[in-house]
Image (cartoon, one colour):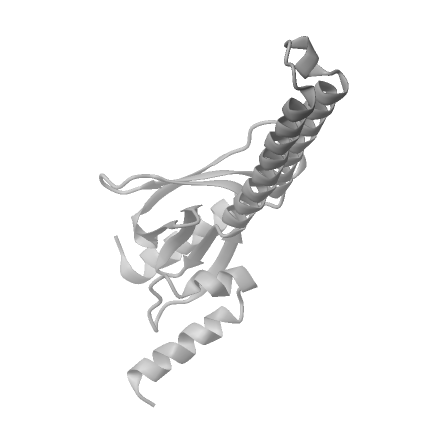
Length: 204
């Protein structure tokens, strides 16, 4: 068995432990033969609820405003001579806004679900979709982790047990911030524990 084939088998074996989304994006990060996959971190589902609630509110508000404007003969109030044409135009604009809100909501949900964090014995890697055509991949050596801070703000964050992880890095590297992390204190302990094991093997 050649080296490249062995590396491919090692990567496939790690993939079996991942979710479908995690498997999809795992190919974008470096994964060495001696590396061990520790965990996959996905964003908390509560964030999806916020996205759909926002989209639903925009759609509902557009329907209400357009209905009130048409039934209240808004065109006549403005002194428009052709109220039927005005109402038809208003309905068309409202329809475009509603369709746009639906599309934007589903795109937002897709981007939210496409965020994946991988913790391995050697690194922390994140695949982040900023937009449909703007993907950012960040990889941080686990040995460069200095500290991990957990932040939970608000009743909802405590009730659904999610929060923000801030990973402080060594030197002048930029800190890593991960939002909507489920069970953030357990994830924090996992990252710190992996860091300590890495130090035991490789030193500072």
